[in-house]
Image 1 (cartoon, rainbow, N blue to C red):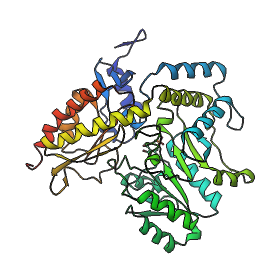
Image 2 (cartoon, rainbow, N blue to C red; image 1 turned 90 degrees about the horizontal axis):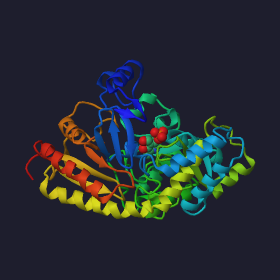
Image 3 (spheres, protein in one colour; image 1 turned 120 degrees about the vertical axis):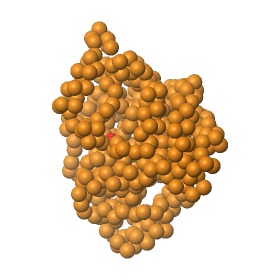
Image 4 (cartoon, helix red, strand yellow; image 1 turned 135 degrees about the vertical axis):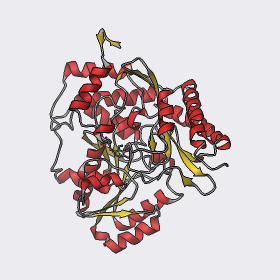
Length: 436
Ligand code: PLP
């Protein structure tokens, strides 16, 4: 394929990739992905010119859509002015971005600490919480996910975290999403030793697991009672994905710290942030933050993120996510009527999880929901996955849950086109399921 006057030889790229690159989430002999060369909006195309409708937003991060000219222009303008300055120096794009984040996050989540991505945001949040409270233990949840660096993996709760070995000390994992149980655990651990609880308000990686009623507000009360900081990881759920700016806005629960990445930069230039409430920020007025990141002050990333947030606002994409999300969920619930392999359908905003089950009555899954996150392993769902990709739809499957989260700019026509491909592919999983 010819891109900007240059021919991209897909076979040659593949050959070099396999020879010189170590690929994430895969054993190297199993790497088998298209060579992507271009994209626009919700569509990507590969070196053979084949088009793909992206219902994954890649890693649920390209909220705004691909190649938005407003963001490209902002990056180019900033590149011509100043590509890099140490985070020690003050800069116009960082000031503007922090101001925008304070505007769109709830209540007094007002001050941001910037890092390179989501994992680093959670690393920083853990350390800031330990410093601000003078306590060390962190409570987190099995089946949650917070990133692939050592600390972030340690507080994650899926099997991928075994890569971090024993992990960082002082992490206490909880299985149930139950505020009373968490309260008991804090008492058993000793309230004066617990710095923070970290969790995703909606566990998207865990098949779009929604919080049980009263859970988030219950945790808020427990944290207030024991002086424990509440950290919401809104890395996936932030920036309009759920139909509000942040998932916590649906439950009116305000955390003490919120971690951000993904939609914040929509994949344009890597960036993450920890935004903290005034009472946490106050501690650091006179106490030093003793760490920083060389690339935690990239003006290119700040300029891109400012343009992303302004574009989300200008195109009213948060409202659009809420509206089209209802269309998405309604359509998927109709699938339940004609596909015996469709179990529970969950979601909020333009983000849905579809359980693929062997038996809808018992809920028996087609494959284990505990399968490692993102890791490609041979599965009875391989034919289903192949059908989606062959027909030009990118949609991730984690465990037994098909996940659908297109960019927020998806058109209604694109949404229905993608869903038709899913509808056709479900015939293959129906063949593996017991009759309804
Ligand atoms: N937190 C959540 C909820 C995530 O889903 C992810 C990535 O998928 C991360 C943190 C880590 O972010 P990153 O991959 O940018 O380090």
